[in-house]
Amino acid sequence: MFAKLRTFRNVLASGGALPSINSSTKIINRKSHVVSYRSAPPPHSKATKIGAVVVGGAMWWWVIWHLWHEPDHITGEFDYPNPSKWTNAQLGIPRDDV
Image (cartoon, rainbow, N blue to C red; front, side, top):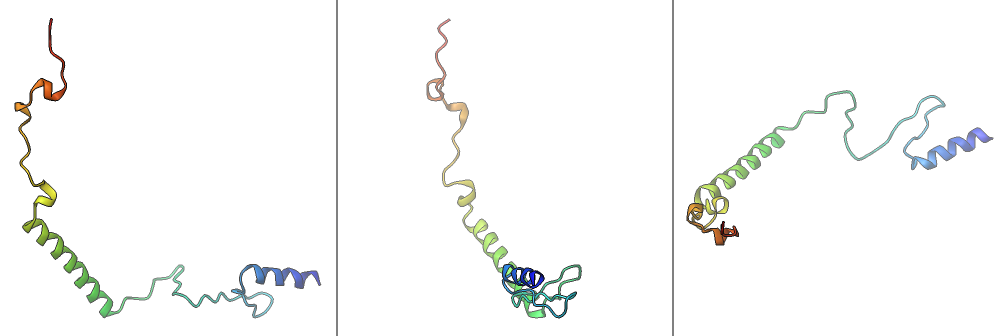
């Protein structure tokens, strides 16, 4: 009787995902996705491969187009100031009175 309770407790703990065929074999029933443990996953369809190339190409076109036509997003809008023209007071360097 305790063995049956132990099996019942295991099935409840697993959420009913382990139905027993017989005492030595159990089947995992997921119903959610393909499991490819220790085997190659199924190959992608031709439409998936073409779609991936199209989406990737569109993304790179968008990035390169905007880098070419709006480089200020990367380099900034204004010219970089010449640091040799900065004074010591602007940089916060105290005067040498020695």
